[in-house]
Amino acid sequence: MNADGQALDGRALDGRAVILGRIRRALGPDRDAPPVPRDYAPASLEVGTPELIALFAERMEGAHATVRRVHDAEVAAAVADIAGRRGLRRIITPPGLDRRWRPEAGAEWLADDPPLTTGQVEGADAVLTAATVAAADSGTLVLDGGPGQGRRVLSLLPDAMIVVLRAGQVVADFPAAVARMDPARPLTVVSGPSATVDIELSRVDGVHGPRELDVVIIEDAAAEPPLAGGRG
Image (cartoon, rainbow, N blue to C red):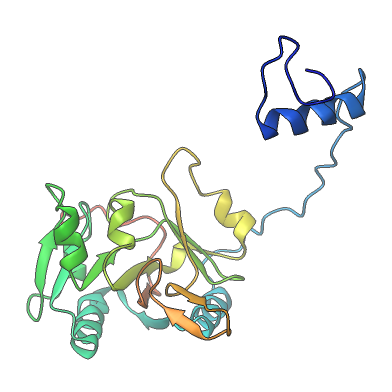
């Protein structure tokens, strides 16, 4: 490539190739990158303490989500109350979700197994889902498409989202959360209901995902789900 951004055979190169070529020439023949210090702060080992759960709830509520703390046997009642208060009638459940989290009455449950059509997902009022991990310091949830979490589209199209989180899944900070993530999985990071601001800084809800987010934290549950036959 010459200085005019053309290949030696006269062909025109795109802008990216021109810029990279100029950088290579500026760097010269000695292109070894300097060593990068990796002395990052270690991830906290603290998990699921009352202080972490309180901090996570504070951060989530600051982002306009609602957070409830319940015991394991109270999840279905909490979900029923959320559905009733928000008028949610058609709720999607991903494969592998704990059946005990679904109230028996008050809503029509749409199992995404076999997968619902895009129109069916879009037409639902909400999705009830599990999560992979949560970071307390930023009030962030992560879904990875595993059992009980389902396809990414389920967390994007319905207008409301109910997430059930076990206390043992709440870690102190995002580095600790990253340590629990599988980078090969489709990760969805949620830090409150979907929102943005327009040019006049007026908040607009529900632009890229659910406008309403409810989080139910099981305070007496470890990170891993029970092995009893209540799942499916």
